Amino acid sequence: MSARGEVVFLSGATGFIGQHLYPRLIEEGFSVRCGTRSVERAQRRFPDRLWVPFDVEDSQLVRAALQGCDSAFYLVHQMGSGAGYHDRERKSAYRFRQAAADHGLRRIVYLGGVEPGGAISDHLSSRLETGCILRNGEVSAIELRASMIIGAGSASWRIVRDLAARLPLMLLPKWTQSRTEPVYIDDVVEALVGALRLQTSKSHRFDIPGPDRLTVEEILRTTARVMGHDTVGLRVPLLSPELSSRWLRFVTRGDLFLARELVKGLKGDLLAEDDSYWELIGHHDRVGFEDAVRRTLDGAEPESVAARGVERLASWVGRSVGSP
Image 1 (cartoon, rainbow, N blue to C red):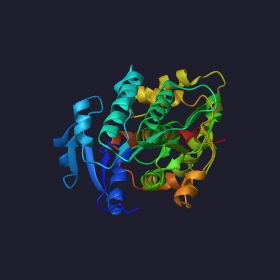
Image 2: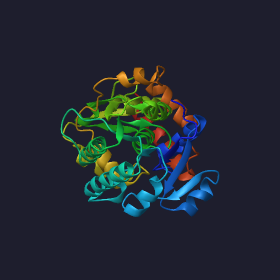
Image 3: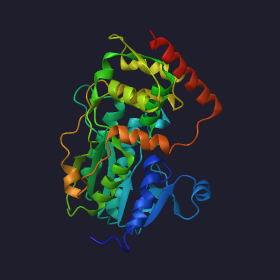
Image 4: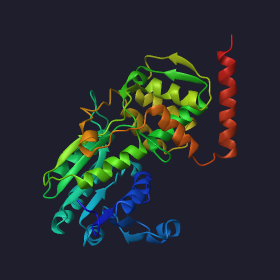
């Protein structure tokens, strides 16, 4: 399918995924319309892009943004808005689905989360319900499900990075033995672009795992090693994800509510059903976890003086604690 002349609406265009996806869409020949709550602010950051007002909770703005488009990316989540986000996400998905159908779009592409093997957190429950709502509409919707995405700007990566950098003594509660398959941002972008090209009039869901299956402990230890930090692990079987999330305020720079919700999603394994999607779109060379960490760290913005100082202290303490 030729992308030439096809108009794609990109919601979440100023976010982590949207910023990485936009250049690939342009490279592939799509005409991209970017949605944002603040057009003026977005234009200052990215003056070469086409911006339109967009708020997924405003029916008129949703309909206006989708008018004249052929397909759309739904890269919206409202977890950062605090309590009650589940209901807002549900209503927003129905609103977007109806507007897409009314304007005759051929495809919606949605990036959600992997279904857990055990108990499900509010965050993952909302992600899965959003995907289900979009797939049950009139427009063909492709739901892609990822676990942890590795890349500068990813909320889950920021937590991993901060924990690995700033905790010389690593507490290892039972949930750190949960397994997942982290995927690099460049592979996620290829998955999203591939979803536009799938030749189907139906809706589908696909998991998009990375090539490595790791425990959370292995993720933290590998990240610390790549960063050049020595860490000491202490197993604490009674520390739940809920309790663990409370001390994140002392470690991570990320939004605390967001961090809590993400950690609560680690009660069980987050593993893909299969990895057949990569073969389906012809993407065979996925980036391994350690390589993804190195690439992300190499391309990261410099830390503040204070943050670097904390990390140097953590590294020194780690070496001291680990010395005989």
